[in-house]
Image 1 (cartoon, rainbow, N blue to C red):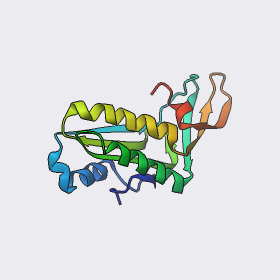
Image 2: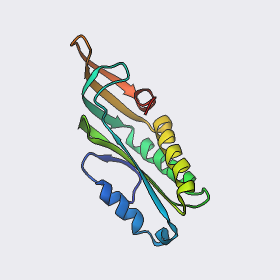
Image 3: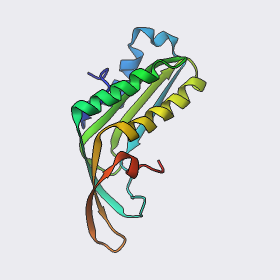
Length: 155
């Protein structure tokens, strides 16, 4: 299950599950570096509002397809052994994990550009939707839907 890139219900897999799935692949012996991006719920919006919680939903079939395609494409790069993207769905509190992006490569110089590209691509292409619950600086309760790209412009 952890080997399957895609969207998952919150709590279904851990970061150790993802790492171990990569380490257990037969070609992992080619890896000399393992990189991991962990996206977490930020406690403040880009406008300075205090985040209370997030709800994440997705067009799951399409999100799984998009995430798999991103990983498969990036795995073709020189020196890349494994690429996985696991995005979670459900309700999240500030500080909780939202996404794991893992890249295994023969060398760190091949790893970092692919890790960054994997993150940028899923943010732009995956049909994952966030409902943000926040409090304005004036104390007004706010609830609104936002896209991955909008909510992470400066991540």
